[in-house]
Image (cartoon, rainbow, N blue to C red; front, side, top):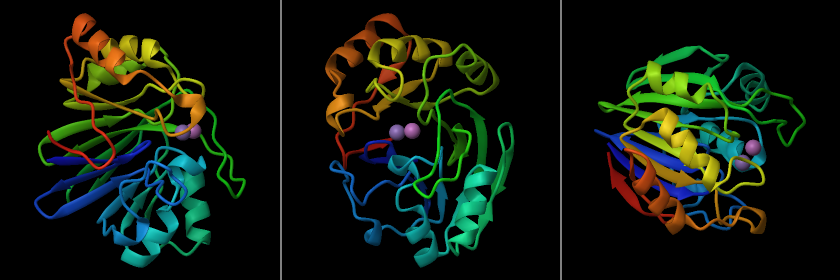
Length: 225
Ligand code: NI
Ligand code: MN
C-alpha cells in the first residue's frame, strides 16, 4: 500500500487502484499538498468534526460519490449536506467496505463541527491492502492506546506530535511505545504557529526508546507500507 501525506492530518492510501482519504483538510490548509478538486477517492474516513479534519469531506464526497465513514453525529450532518454513501458507526464499530475495514476507537479530545454539530472524536484502525493502519486522530496521551495495540497488530501509526491541541512529541513517544506499531508517521505539526514541533528530535527519540521505525514525510511525500 502506498501512503501519501497531504499535510497536517490528511493522508491518501492507495492500493490496486483503490484510494482512501483520511481527514481531507485541504482548502485553507497552508501545508496542503493537493487541492480538493484534484482528488478522486473511493472512500473518505473522518476522525472527528473539527474543521482541520472534516475539511473538504462534503465537497469531495458529493463530487465523487465516495463512501464516507464518520461517527454517527457527523454522518447525520453530512447527510443533511447532501452526501449519499454514508456509513455511521460509533466507537467500537467496524465498517466493512469492498476494499477493507474501518474501526472507530477512542481518542481523548473535544469536537464540534464548523456548523456546530457536537461529536465524539475517534481514532481509526484501517485494514487495507494487507496492512493495518492506525490514524490516532487528535488525542492526548491516555492508557487505552495500549489496548488498541494489543488488539491489533499495527503496521503504521499516524501520531500527532504538535502539542497544544493534541499530545506533544514527548507524550507521542509514550503513545508509540504503547501502540507498538512497526512504523510511525508523525503528523499534526508545523501547520500553524501553536503546533510547531521538532520532528527530527521526535524521530531520534522514537529510534532510541521504542521498537518502532519512524517515517518522516514532508507534505506530498509518499511511503510504501
Ligand atoms: Ni481536533
Ligand atoms: Mn486537529
